[in-house]
Length: 331
Image 1 (cartoon, rainbow, N blue to C red):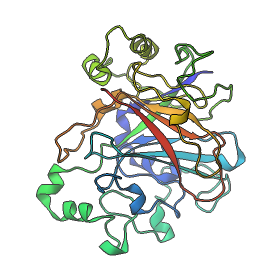
Image 2: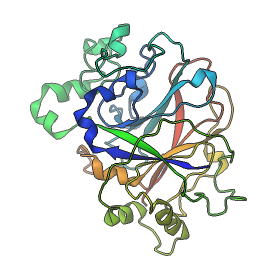
Image 3: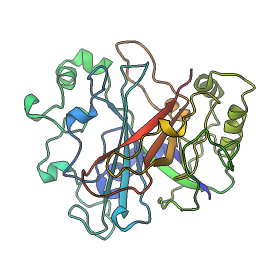
Image 4: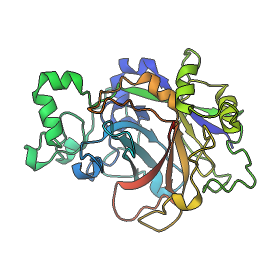
């Protein structure tokens, strides 16, 4: 099965309508383009578990699959910019039937009105676009964002929204299987299958080659590590890739350290089924993000961020379901 690759579309900033929820964007940065416009996560669900500061929206991926209740399906990824050791990540899955209360069956046109949770009576934080709270007059999600917004000095220093870009997607037919021992590799908990992932395809933009210094920083290990050599070889055809989508297969690890065992990936908390790998965020994304400073003065860097989701993409219950992210750190 081919791997779906995602790259930054530098020209997308001139077509702002593409960031609207009605266009089901895959994108980096900006404010979340929520899929279900009513039952978005509470502010408390988007706080760091360690420092209680609101998480930063990193990216979202539109990833419908061939199940009737997943006609529309988007995964949202957030991270804590303040913490370094044991950094908090949050992943949410939202999915809708083809016929739903928010979007028409026919595809949206550029001139169509912008849709957002505000249309459903949901109040959003003016700083980050997540759910606000009555405690902060339904204007902010937290005292942290209120203080930043009301203080120009803080606003300039602590950016809480990353630069916004559309993610273009293309199938990489030549990509190698990511596992070093794909037939009997028991170091990863993902199951192999021939199921295809149905993601709208885009086109790649011409960009400069891979930043070797960035890759070495993300790796930070033994130069003879065969995983690292496999990593470099696998991305060589599209070195600017920031996303690798390979649902129900295996991640492409950057080194031999910090690879999860099966029991490291928790089962789905809603239906009890085993979670499986869906996509990974690549360290190349860091070269596009004007990352905000943190009070600890530690930069946000990583090797691989691997997202695991319910293998059945279960539907009943909570509208935005929490999924799991494994960070293969640069250490």
